[in-house]
Length: 239
Image (cartoon, rainbow, N blue to C red):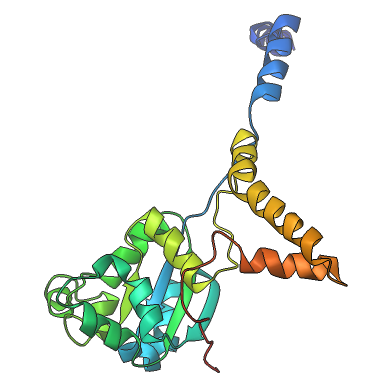
């Protein structure tokens, strides 16, 4: 009993004590710290016309590789829309054939999400050239499903900025994270939302429509400064 008492006593006396000042400092630190935020990276994935008949197989591989498919739609791009999507390649020798290929049949557009999504998706699809992919990355999607250096089965955004642009192109209503907060949100409202809203309200006063709410909503959609710059709406293909 004496031994147990001594051990208990020693254990009690060696426990750190928290002073009132330390507790107050900790409380102030917790108040000043922003709440933790976790942003899951996203990217755009396309299953191209030459591999559209293997879409289910490819989607299964995507899911088994740790990705989540947030959005999906089957579409058929017009040549004008394909030109807009690949505008960065305008003027290159392969541009006309690329546009013709991407508008030759339906494609599957998907928004994928996971940690380090852009890099992992690029690793999974492999090199752009199918022949090279078969040599260096034989297990990649392009090696398995691609046909040649252009008909390479799948597409993946190559950077964060590209993924933002391409997701908005294929999914205009998609919200790109992170959503701005605090001063960043106020700056965004002042720079983008307020001028557009002011223009809509001014035009509303001039037009005096019977249903002002619906009219303003339609006007805002039509005059959205972030609206994808395509000549025609992307028509969704039936499943």
